[in-house]
Amino acid sequence: MKGFENESTYRKSVESGEEQRFDNLFDGAVEKVKREILGKRFPMFINGKEVYSPTEAEEHSPIDNSLIGKFQQGNREHTKAAIEVAHDAFASWSAMDYRERIAIFRKAAELLRQQKFLIAAILSIENGKTRYESVGEVDEAIDFLNYYSLDLERNKGYLTKSRMAGSTSKVTAGFQGAPGNEEAISIVMKPYGVFGVIAPFNFPISISVGMCTGALITGNTVIFKPSSTDNMAMLTGFYIYKIFSEAGVPDGVFNYLPGPGSEVGDELVSSSKVSGIAFTGSRKTGLGMIAKTYNLGMQKVFIAELGGKNPAIVSKNADIEAAVEGIAGSAFGYAGQKCSACSRVYVQESVKEEFISKLAEKTRSLKIGNPLKKENYIGPLISVSALERYKASVEEAKAHGRIIQGGNVVDAGLQGIYVEPTIIEADHSNRLFHEELFVPFIAIDVYKKFSDAIAKANDVEYGLTAGLYSRSNSEVKEFMTKIQAGVIYVNRKVGATTGAIVGAHTFVGWKASGLTGKGSGSRFYLQQFMREQSQAIVK
Image (tube, rainbow, N blue to C red; front, side, top):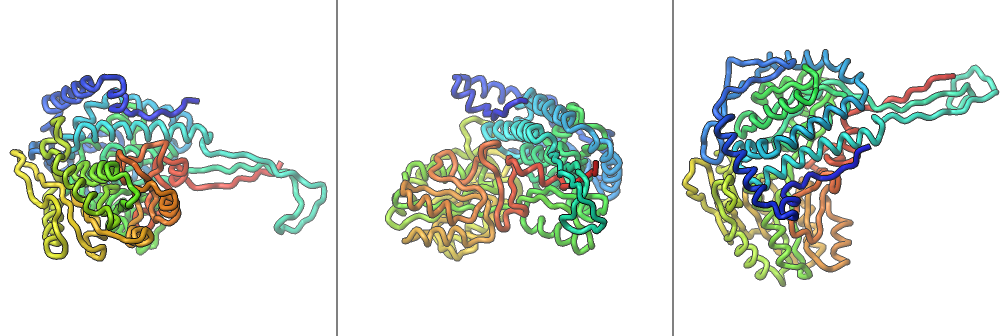
């Protein structure tokens, strides 16, 4: 049985003195993508066949508005066709020995590893990430493939067997505990059927691969809908399909179907032949899908991560330098467009001025611009709607708080949307502490007693990630006991609220941030895609 090791490409490059090679591989991949891939017309894939639609959408890079490609926009009829082929393919795919499925996804991991820098370059161009964010995301996708393969292997396909001894006494009544013959008992985990996988724009490789692998490796079939309208991520989705197909996923088992949520997504939710939905996105959209399903009198499995409003607490006992590094990184990495981004901070009064001064200084040092260039830390916002949220948040801060740093749109000399990372101070009651913004924007409030900080941190609908900076054992213990979040970090310099590592941390949302209380990258994740069956045979 193979073991599990994280990919960790950049870390290994730095530790081995090969950072320049890392940069050369990425820069070379960017040039290859620009030269050989961008600007083409890309099909959908249903039942392994290229499909073209009467409606196409142009996808443009948020970096400079350059054309990425023309993509098919699936409609309701395309979705119905994909559901039918996925439904038909389920019988043979689910009957395949789990070890054969594992072999396919281990091959997919190897194929993705071979194309790592190419896929990372596509990802950076498509959604504006830096090379470090993009290579790290491809690494995470490879980790998901290998971790879930190992998990299924270790659990032997989630089959357990036992025997219940028989009795020499005989009775005819069928009541609980009546003596009977020996029974051979199997507890089997079986796939549900067809899953719709509806993916976000911000992690279109790692989250998409993780959700699709979870459904597929356990024996379900999939219709995969990448983010396809306002915030587009269709080219990365296309390459996920190509890698899975080359790895050996049969035709019809995995179908790539970009298109609007109003047609593709709605049909997946409405169809009685779709057994489950795996979704990452906004709480409003997720709950709307669930409500529609049950209002139609249907039951489906919903596996969903629904956003966050993630706090960090900075105590008077904190290492302020570590707090500044961790909070700035988590708030402003990828321009704050992460569900795990740190978006609010509660700092103890006695260290408020020192912390704010150093955080503002750190923030001013972060370079804004083309994320394909090594020196830039903050790239573009994904869309005009993100810019509108940013501007509205700045105006709210001006009216009901104070802007400490930032608040302006930046001319980066490109056609993309670039803004300053922004720090504001306001009262916890303000909406900026409660609404998910998905922009580089952090709100700060003060506290006197540590219990007040915990109360404020918990006083939101969401419960995804949270961080603490304190060298007080009693504060750490209170935080670990009382904080209401699925992923928590203490004194973490590399990220106050971001950066879960597959196989080490699980990524799970509490409260309005999730549904099942089970996270990705955990030993419980795959079980969500299966249902239990108890089988007893009398010998």
